[in-house]
Length: 112
Image (cartoon, rainbow, N blue to C red; front, side, top):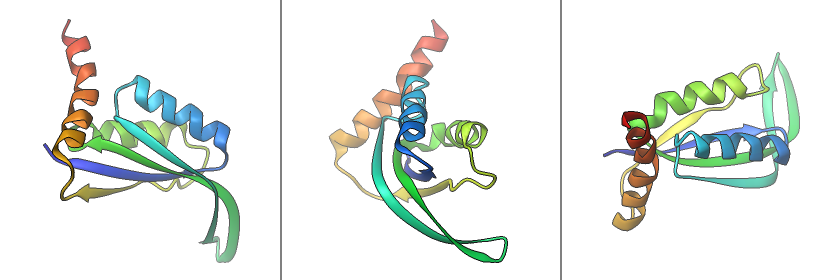
């Protein structure tokens, strides 16, 4: 199974908590790590902008990636949300197994 880390930024801790908890409830990921109080600098409409943001590191599998990205896009408050996925080339086998088991729980519930 292939594993992914998805990065996304949100405007505040409250929204980050809401999104993270819902991703977990839906079993779209196994874990979300939120880095509070980051400062983003970016180009928007030909201007340099800056805003405080919370950065999420979302751990998931390839099989859940499309649904996770679709959910983020639906609930995200930004016009163009940051949603970037990177491959995990290696990791502790027990941790990767835990990710797999965590997201597969939803598959078992749906079949019942």
